[in-house]
Amino acid sequence: MKVLFVASEGLPYSKTGGLADVIEGLPKALVEAGHEVGVLLPRYHGNRVSSTLVSSVTVALGDRLRFPAIAEGKSVSGVRYFFVDDPDFYDRDQLYGDKHGDYPDNAERYAELSRVAIEFVKRVWLPDVIHCHDWQAALVPVLLRTQYANDPATRSLPVVFTIHNIAYQGLFPPAALRKIGLPETLFTMDSLEFYGKANYLKGGLIFSDYLTTVSRRYAKEIQTPEFGGGLDGVIRSRADRLVGILNGVDYSAWSPESDTLIPQNYSIHNLDGKRTCKKELLETFKMPMIDLDRPLIGIVSRFVDQKGFDLIAQVCSELMNENLAVVALGTGQPEYEKFFRSMAEKNPGRFAVKIGYDNALAHRIEAGADMFLMPSRYEPCGLNQIYSLRYGTVPIVRATGGLDDTIQNFDAKLGNGTGFKFEAYDGRALLESVREALKVYRDPKIWQIIQVNGMAKDYSWKASAAAYVTLYEAAKRSRIPRVAGTSKR
Image 1 (tube, rainbow, N blue to C red):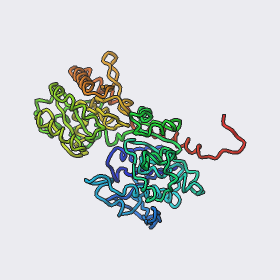
Image 2 (image 1 turned 180 degrees about the vertical axis):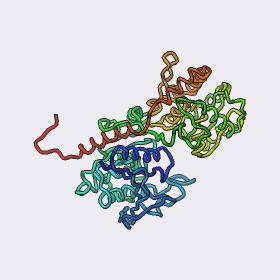
Image 3 (image 1 turned 30 degrees about the horizontal axis):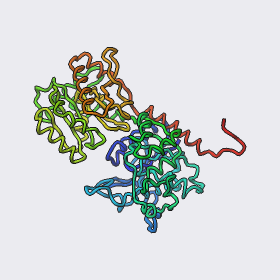
Image 4 (image 1 turned 90 degrees about the horizontal axis):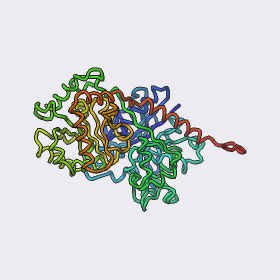
């Protein structure tokens, strides 16, 4: 099967979040399973290309014409990478915005990505299915089912659309539709209109053949007012075409047995190296070595509302009265960066933070910490809790989205489970879960059982890729015209 991914970012070429990891890992797994996969991305600053395939594509954005090129980059692990090459739109310091906020022309930038994607399949590489990701690629199915509905080259192309985080929807003023060349007839409740604005994500939800999101629990959550971002009604109306498929992880990059970014490798059969990793991590954060036996909690995250750090703020004094230490790495909203700095200042030698993103340090935290804290308000899938399992770093998580799907609460009597979960979005619930983990930590034999339970879990992309192939096949069948006189039973 030939599958084309259309997305706004993807490793190894661009990244701001977990979407990029998926656009690297899933295509790679599909190729390993024998399928042909291409990925179409914007050509951002610094992306190198191997050749130009189409020197100019005429794209009508309202009353303006643009002429981007289509280029090909270096293939990686058998996956072909293609680019929409338009320097004025994409050759910028950041992908989506700068210190002043989102780029004011994002509506046009990602409308162009979608329009070029359709021209790409007509001119360069015709797939069996198009797999679009998040609001930046959501206009692909809209265009296919409206302005390209009668085009013989594309009218039977099935589209699978994945929601990675429903909080990001691509909301723009109504005038944006005119700027991107879409008719006013699409500005209705049954199409792209959303409380007086144009909503790209809504278009993807309505016009795609099948919808997916990145965990089973999140697929249920986004059908509720609490987690649906105002689109829960739309999603419920398409529930028969919605599937939750858990994201996988790339164990070639995230495994303590082979990780080149940690000071000593270790495995499920020999955990000795983990203590060396903890010692080095304490040194990195300038924490005293007397803390080597004190439980160390790691945090690697964006510092934003979604991630639940307001819960830590609710119980920070009581948390730091416990016999533990915390190291944190991340960047995000100023109020949370200020909170983490304040915690470090008030608790020297017990709480340390680095503001920013450092991939090597993220690996060392996963390897050196004893526990990993993710108290998210919501978490579509989450990757760090899965990395933590493989590194024998026991997750403490709130039972939401992919966190609930991937972490089994530890039962000391039965000796099963992989971490500690709490349900209520409440600081007290977080604190009690941490205390339960600390209690288990005091018994090294039981603690090693929970570590080994987690390290034995397999969340590689293989199973998820097989589930996507099944969905691609269903999407293809859904586009086959029914023969007159037949009926379904």
